[in-house]
Amino acid sequence: MTGEQSYYSYWGKARKEGDEGDPYHLLPYHCLDVAAVADVWWENCSSIRRAFLTSSGTSVEQTLKPVDISLQEIPPSCNSLLAGLCSVADWLGSNSDEGAFEFLSDQLSLDDYYKQRLSVAKKTANL
Image (tube, rainbow, N blue to C red; front, side, top):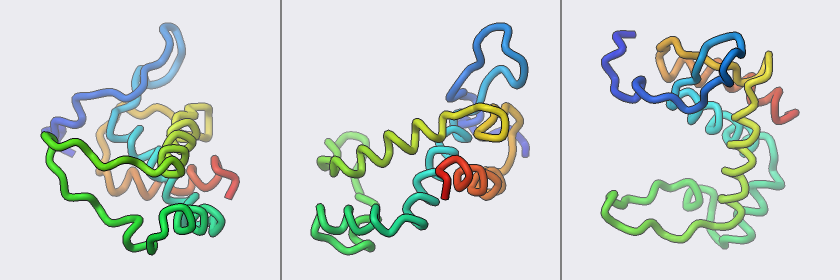
């Protein structure tokens, strides 16, 4: 990895002063930790998928379809179930205990990192 990507310039979490290990966890990795939790939870829990579809009255394809908006536009309102899923995924994806989403400040391919973290996410979410 060349390190030229600007998103490697930001950290998502930092260790408390005096704690051992990498001093920070890069922001793209934290985002991917959270996405991995949401991914395995969605894929392995039919009740979550069913709840989304029931509450929104849409198909899975419509639920996951990206919204084409610019940064200047106000985003559409968020389904409260989606907000809840994201909040819990962030909470679980923030677990930096040993064997969980440990801090990493080295630059890896984002695809490789994400694939590695899917198994951690599955363990973390008890799936």
